[in-house]
Image 1 (cartoon, one colour):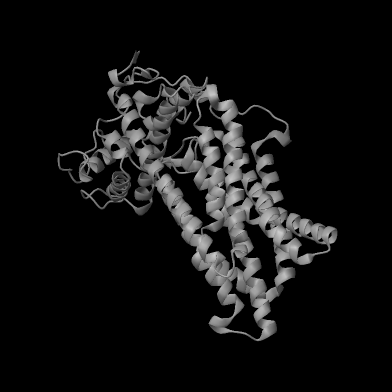
Image 2 (cartoon, helix red, strand yellow):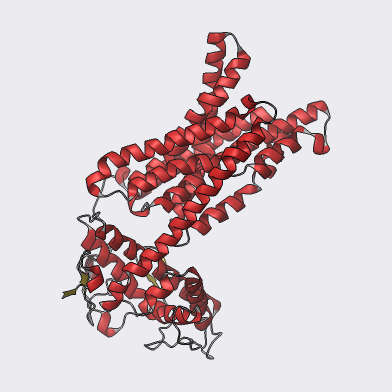
Length: 482
């Protein structure tokens, strides 16, 4: 049975929520552990092992090269100083990605690719190109200038863009829009800048050691001020332009997707190269060229990209508030859940309420910290799946409906149903506590069913907290014990 609310008539019909919903796209209990036989090199473990091996080899080679150029003491000093902006940049990009968080495995891969693979390609290609130009022109100074302003931007931005391309192609389900492109690009560039800063700061420390300089007048202090204090966002800003191109290509309608999936990433990459070349060539404008480019181009560009990313995040919250009421009308969600899920403050309140309630801090209910953490994780997973469902329906309404839409929708509804007894009351409480609903919230949250006991169950996307398999749910629960 299907029903379509009046405000969603341009969207696919929403499956009605019955007492025992049947998820035909989810494998039956007898086969949910079944995996088809594959040759060993096509398995997920083999692919992951190959990626880790390649990145580990790149890490060993690039670290050996950097240590050889800077010396042991310079390498350690550069490492200690270069790591300082990394937590700040990582926290900023994770804050931007809070609506639909990118899986950590993608972000770790992006950071490692930038720090090891892209840095290795850049240092080898830049050195080779600079030597070749110096040999061909017999002018080492001109070769250095040309390599910094022309060769380095092309090589470095292309190497960093490779990580975004790989995630775009092989993790397409996780790459759904502009924010995903910005976050993946930001992590890649943060890793690249980390390795590059080790090299620059280590070399500066070596120069100071040879000259006997120290204090604020040293080359190390000047390099630290320019690269760590004034422009930690330089490399992320360049590569974010490439990520935005991939993000716009991801949301392009199917009838225009073919040319947009090629043109938009290339346009973003070209803009990243141009901005990088302008930054590297700032010395051409004289002694104050760096400050001129910094004030006239870098700061406005950084402000514009930041505003666009934050605006896109707010737009994602509005999409959730617009699309999820259709599922609430069909009975899948409580009426207040779309209001809570479209507010970051309400989401945090829901996780905290579940943790305190199941942890034994409310109503005198016995609990433990482990149970509270498990309940908070269940609510967080519920929020993630509900957000993915809203974006899936939004893309379908824009004409990007793929052949796997019914199966993907049923899969997401299945995961929501598994967690609804824990997450539903917590989100309802959070909607009232955050002022999204006028009625004041009760405390502790009023569960509509007896609160389930803590239990760990597999859900396909890792482990989470959920209700025990009740008798009436046995018909569709693929994870019950046989």
